[in-house]
Length: 324
Ligand SMILES: NC(=O)c1ccc[n+]([C@@H]2O[C@H](COP(=O)([O-])OP(=O)(O)OC[C@H]3O[C@@H](n4cnc5c(N)ncnc54)[C@H](O)[C@@H]3O)[C@@H](O)[C@H]2O)c1
Image 1 (spheres, rainbow, N blue to C red):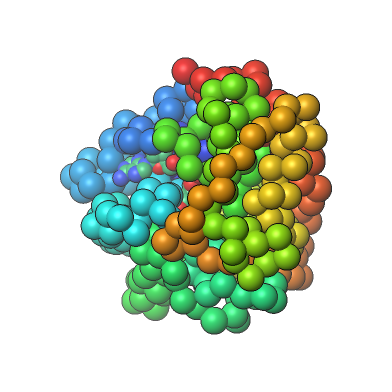
Image 2 (image 1 turned 45 degrees about the vertical axis):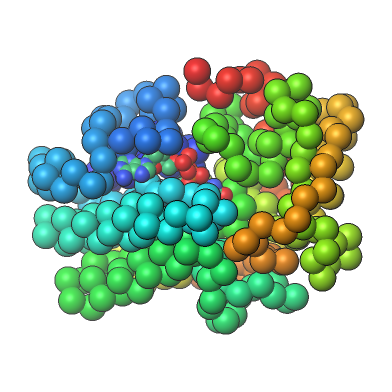
């Protein structure tokens, strides 16, 4: 297939692009590098350095070749920031996604794979299924839900088949390819920065959540397993016009448990600082990924937190400045 990938210079998009190239597909990456890295663009991909907000560049890019599929990773990802500056998220994650859908539909693209998130759900004691109550606790999650719902209208009106993959927390690394956000807000890289001596403390935001150790519980999904879910979804869109799947490991780990795992894999002490809760965080988000396993035959290979942390540690240790 000829595949157009937005955000393919970022963490998840570049890993997916690399796997698709290896599988024999042609890949064009469209990325403004607002948070991504040119060095992360995999060899063999065509690279267009432009932003989705440049609707003319986008229209030209999509009409230059006939694309079989669009995979849309480009977005701002910091849920906490989305509660301070919602407009930034509405513009990039919602308005720019609408421009992309419109341009894709106009140029006759028939498959669209979208990076959605667990943040579309309410916090829950039980593992979240696709039928669990929706209710984003931050505007980041709201923008992702709004894009999913808009995609459904493009499906009905323009026949755009879509898959929304609701990722839980992407984590871990592949050889030479890992998480490099600037500034880094995700727990695992932040904790490993402390292990590397690049930061003094690992901060725990909220220690009074209704969880066994009082800290938030999240589901960490290894980047390799996330990539394989995309490959399966892309293939399945040939016969299915709408798919929404949770993509998580099904295992929940508290912030304290992640820090303990980081101490084990790095052999470093990792001092902590306990802070008040952050607006927009929910107590527990853990996936039930039974549906994608049943329907697409997805088989995650990594469910051990030390295995995930170990691969992340290898990446951060060998690339202490990310892709620089
Ligand atoms: N990382 C996670 O744990 C996680 C969890 C759930 C969902 N997601 C979603 O997955 C997607 C990828 O996340 P990531 O962790 O790889 O983030 P990332 O920041 O590493 O990658 C995002 C990429 O999109 C590009 N981009 C952003 N806005 C753009 C624009 N307007 N025009 C062109 N390019 C633009 C950035 O330059 C970057 O290369 C995002 O949509 C995110 O919301 C991520």
